[in-house]
Length: 291
Image (cartoon, rainbow, N blue to C red; front, top):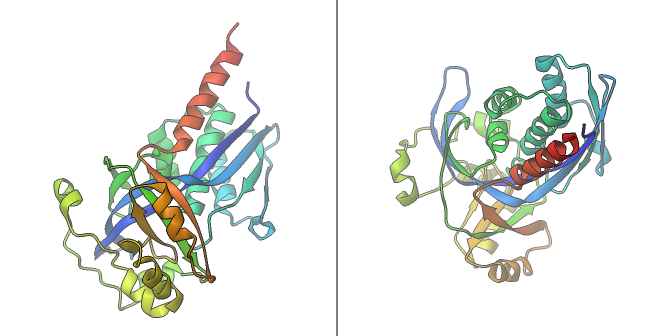
C-alpha cells in the first residue's frame, strides 16, 4: 500500500462574480465561472499509524491549527473514523487573501490525498460534501473542473472555455472577504443569468468597485493591467488578472509589473492537474498491489 502522496493545489480565477441576493443565513447567492489554472501550491502527505496530524510549511507562520489543511484532515478523520494520521508538508506559492482560492484548494487536495492514503474509498460527491463544511470554494477544487457556479458557489455545472493564458497580479495588501461581504455598500441585486446565456453575457465583479475604493493599490494594479488587456479582480481580491491568447504576450506584460505587486503567468485548464496526479497515484497503487 502506498504511504506517500504528492498533489498540486491549484489556483482558480473568478472570471466574473455576480451577487444575486442575500440569504436568510447571512450568506450570499452568487454566480461565477471558476477557471482552473495550472499553477499553485504543492502538498506531500505521508501516512502514519497514529491519529496525529502534523503540518510543516515553507512559510512557518502557516504551521498553525487553524490552517485549512489540518482542518480538512481532522474533519475527514472524524467523518471516516479512521485510526490513521499523516505528516503533511505544504509548499506555499499562492498569495494569502488574494481571491485565488489557495486555502480552499489546499483543503481539497488534502481530502483527495488522504482519501487515497487512508484507503477510505469515499466518492468525489462525498468528499465535496465534507469540503463544503470547510468553505464554499472547496467543492469546486474537489471536482477539479472549470465550472459555472451558483448558490454560495457549491452548485457546479462544467463549462468549456477556449484556452487562454492569464497574468495574475497581487498588490501588497490583504483584503478581508468577511469585510467586503458585510459592507453595506456591496451591491446584492444583480439579475441571475441562465446557464445558456453565461458565455454571451457581460461579465463584471460586483465586489470590485468597493474593493478599489477601500484598497487603492488594487485600483492602481488594475489601471496598470488595463493597458495590456481587459482586466478584472478575482473573488474579493486583492489579486487581479487579464487573459491573453498566448503566453508570450502575458509574459511581456508581467515584465512591466509595478514594484508593489507580485505575479505569475498560468494557463487556464478545463481539468485540474490534481485529477491527473490522482489518476497516476491510483494506477501506481493498482500496479503495486498486483501479484
